Image (cartoon, rainbow, N blue to C red; front, side, top):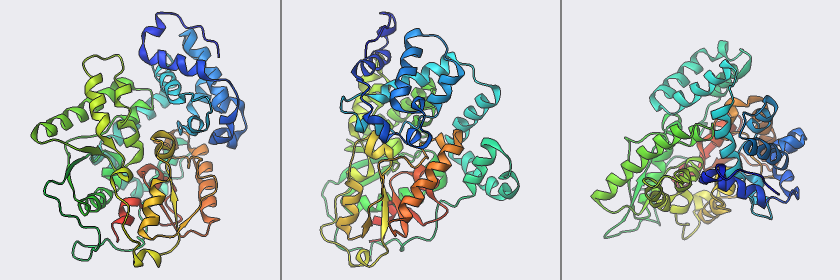
Length: 421
């Protein structure tokens, strides 16, 4: 594509990246078949190719977008399935992130929208408050859940139980066999508890810690840290995201001064993907860019840190057939393909192949709260695809996907399932 940006616009490194992504696109259309909203709605403006045209017009002009442009860009899940499918290597993430920041700066949303978006960032990034309001929603849900719009949808979502009956109980240290490893100097790994997962399912971190500890890795939780910034960033609130990211980096640097840190991880693939992009977040910031890149270089997803079992477990082989749902943030964001399935098969679990596994389930961070109708339709499709395989439980690597898909089949984080062996 030909572009027409002004030189002063391209002095911004984020805009330069967006402009490069636009010039890389050849409008071949390979991305359309991998875009959940285009597959669902059939509107070219809700495809990556159509959105790229809208973003180019908006960013080149530098003017506030119109309501139609905002509507179609808001409908984007940022699942990045298009980036995986693109033969030209278009960095769609650079485009949609820059566009959302531009919308946040220049477009005045209706008051109710602004209040709801600010409410999401304020509540979801405060674990204690979020846990309290989630409990209240379950208490008053039978009444509030009948309300129309986003509030009613948010309440109905809270009523869905994240955890259902587990496939089996966690193995105690005494029961566990096979993968304990002694190490004179075990790997030191820093765990970030995050925000939403800390409120909804703290047992995931406990399971991840046990699994990694059995493989000779020393896990330390930085409980004083909070949100990684992903939630605010994907709502266009870059300044808030940077503030939260700086707090994370400072805490990890303080831990590093005590003793070298081998890796940093968070047991939610959506957050892990954002941690790895900290260097890009601080592009153009001479003070923080190198510190962010150093941090990002040590960031890992949980499935990257776990070693496959040396031999299958007899208990796993007799467990029900399960479906591993690979989050978009794992397969398209971090581009880690097949690792979760490899770990589960090595442990002896029987896996069902999910049709259209590359398509998003509709969770996408705050998307399921902001676009509940589309999110629920995508959820229904994903659940139907999973049920068609005969799987009796869903395993994934991201709290957003697990909470979104819960309510019909048992759901578990991959760390919890590996912890049962």
